Length: 566
Ligand code: C2E
Ligand code: CA
Ligand code: CA
Image 1: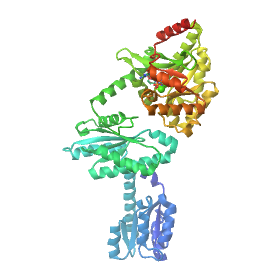
Image 2 (image 1 turned 30 degrees about the horizontal axis):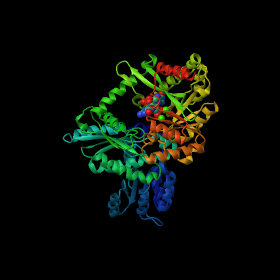
Image 3 (image 1 turned 90 degrees about the vertical axis):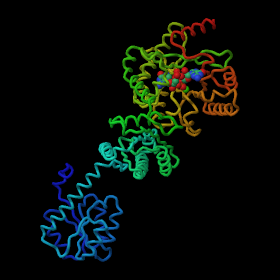
Image 4 (image 1 turned 180 degrees about the horizontal axis):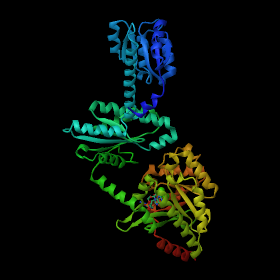
């Protein structure tokens, strides 16, 4: 017997007796009231009211069929329409043999024939039904996840082995389904909509696997798994889920991704089956053109590589394997281009793997929260270099550092920055903070609050990768920032494509309206540079002037600039 039942043993269970004859009600009440708390109703209508107000606390209903106002059949029909009430066992009281059969076919739990038998028999009969239903409800309650009505993790694993045992001849696939950035839906639209999304996906998956004799479960949050006879299910599932989500979400954007581990049944290691499907699923995270991915050797190799990077991170920080590079930014509107500032960009010089670009490890560390350690290292290093250049060359070259969205969630971010600049002995204006546009759109309220605090302390904010985060014009006017950093996709074709040029012209207008400075990055060609200058762009960063340089090379450049000026 489960703990749940045991805990309920001390409690008197409630039984509702529904009968229009007072004598019958009293007779039954007498028999039951030692063991049960008894409620009484004279007809279906009254019974329904009581049932609705008692809901979860009702253990069983004893029901007469022929009554005035609302008879037993109608009452039973209405009971079945309620998700909670339909689980309460109904025992029919009748003297009519035909009605016994009819009511059993309708789905009542049992019947007690009138006139009433020996009290012990009635009690035993009711006791047996109560026990049966409680156990059954407990099993369903623990087997299924309450939000989606799919199996929970434990039962999914249990059934997976059963499926293997019973259908050993079939090849079966493991499919993982995830919602892209589910936490954002929860955070910006509330848990209620989040749950609605999950239950809609759950229902869709349930219907699908039912047709193909598969099983499905929800693990934590937005992780679903499906174990199903080998076939081309993933694309069909994708279509089906997207279609049903459209109704729930209207204009809210929500996308899903699927990962498939084909012939998972050949791998006896059950945990690995899930891992591989999940890895395939994550291989297209943040990729908005692909929705389905299959586990293969490449994914497996990448997985090992990433595991190694995570494993090596602390050692790398301690041994200073990370090198901060500086890419110069030039002011271009007043005469000759002039070195005005730089962006700090990190590289990892790994003792075994060689030079690793931030494009590889930054997204990885953003995923698992380790990014903050790396960023802190860069911020400190950048501040110290600004101080060094001032001391050694008498110049003030501010440096922009990248602040990832994770960092923005830290409560004392502003204080951290203040202590970094204080420790280095530079002023707040010498450390510019780059925040990617999409961070603003993800979690607007929180980000705005943090940015406001930073600006109050005197820091200047650059909105990085502008044009890739889907801010609306409307939204931009609410967002606090000082510099707009035009993403390189806009720069790429500016010299060759009329439409690209028009777009940049438009962005320049916006910047003027918002009264912010514009930096263009990824400028590689003279034509791009000239075009941007013509359009009024203030600052240029890109290979046209210089690649990111290691600290020594950057100092060399500084020396040249100083000599050149003199
Ligand atoms: P980002 O912030 O947009 O940085 C600009 C990227 O463009 C850099 O790539 C830079 O080397 C590259 N770039 C600059 N000029 C040109 C050009 O003319 N042509 C082309 N094709 N590329 C150019 P990098 O250094 O590989 O950094 C990639 C991304 O990694 C950065 O994009 C940034 O999002 C991230 N990142 C780099 N360092 C850090 C860091 O310390 N912290 C965090 N959170 N992210 C960082
Ligand atoms: Ca940047
Ligand atoms: Ca950028």
